[in-house]
Length: 452
Ligand code: PFF
Image 1 (cartoon, helix red, strand yellow):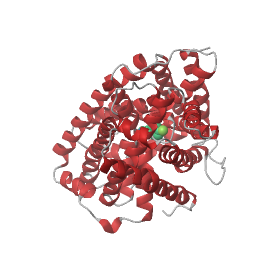
Image 2 (cartoon, rainbow, N blue to C red):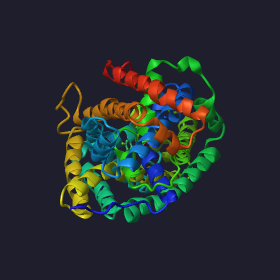
Image 3 (cartoon, rainbow, N blue to C red):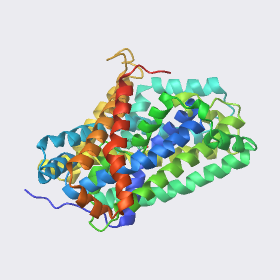
Image 4 (cartoon, rainbow, N blue to C red):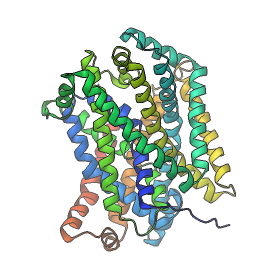
C-alpha cells in the first residue's frame, strides 16, 4: 500500500520547523549551565566554532540524504545506499537514529513537564523572597512527588501528540509558525528585563560569556562543546533526515542551514544574557550545574521587581522551546510507523506517544521510588541521557558524515549544493577528514570516566 508523502508548505515553514527543533532545552537549560561549569567564554567560543564547522555540514547532509530518500530515516538510508551501489546495512544509521529520538523524547518530555509546572509555581508567587535552600527544597520535593511529575509529563506528551497527529504542514509547521515568533519576543523581553534590573551585572555576564579566557579551555570543555553542537542542532537522531524527507527540490540547503544555525546560536547566546545577569546580580553561582534554571534562577526571580511575572514568562519561553523540539523528536518514529504499518498518521502518533510516555514513567520513577535501580552505576534517567548523547548520537552522526562524504557521488552533491571550487574543497576536507576525526574523538571520550 502506498501512502502519499507530505511536504512542507513553504521554505519559511520548513526553516521555522527546523529552527524549532534546534532551539530547545539545549539552548536555554543545557547551554548556560554547561558554559557556567566550563568557565564561560572559552567553552562558548569553541561551541560557536563547532556549530559552523561541524554542525552545519552534518545538518546539510542529513537534509540532503532525507530529501533524496523521501522516506523515514531507516528506509531513506537503505534506499539511498542502494541507489549509490552500497550495502543495505547503512540502514543501521537510520535505525540508531530513530531509536535515539524515541529514547531522548522519553526524558525530554519529563523535563518539558518540569518547565510547564514551573510556569504555575512562578505565577503563584512560590518563589517570592526565597533563598537557595528554599528553592533547592522546592525542586527536590518536586522530584520526589511522582504524581505531579507524572501529570506534567502526561500533559506535555499530550500536547505533542495533538500537534504531531495533525500532520507535517498543519501540525508541526503551523505550531512552529506560531510558537517561534512568540519565543523570540519573550526572549527579547527577558534580556531587556535582565539589562534593566541587574545593573552592572549585565556587563559582567557579557564578559563571562564572550571575553576570551583561553586558560579555562581543556579537553573536557572542547568535547562538551562538540557534543553540545550536535545536540543543539538535533543532529544524529534521524530528525533532520525525517524533516529533509518532506522537503521540495527547490530549497537551497546551505543557505537554509546557515540561517538555522545562526538562529540557534543567537537563542543560546541571548538565553545566556537573560540568565547570567540575574544570577550575578544576586551573587549566585554560575557553575551550579543542571539546577541553574530550576534552582538558582528562581532565587533571582523571587527577589527582583516583577519577578513572578518575569519568572512566569521565562518558564513559558522554556516550555515553548521544549515543545517545538519535542514534536521533532516524535516525528521519526511516527513517520516510520505511518509508512511501514497500515496505521494512519493519527494512530501512528498515538501509538508512538504512548510507548514513549510509558518509558518516561520509568525516568520519573528513577528520581524517587526507583532511585536505587542502577545499571552501569546510573539511574534510568542518567543512563538514557548518557546512552543517547554520548553514544548513539555521535555514532549516527559519524555514520551520516562517512556515508555522505565517502559513499555518495560527490559530483552530484557539489551540484546540489552549488559550491565553487574553493568552497567544495573546504567542504570535502571538512566532511571527509575533520568531522569524522572530531566525532570519533567525542565517542572515545564518552567512554572515559567523567573528569568532573
Ligand atoms: N535541539 C534541541 C535542543 O537543543 O534542546 C533538542 C533536541 C532535539 C535534542 C532533538 C536532541 C534531539 F534529537
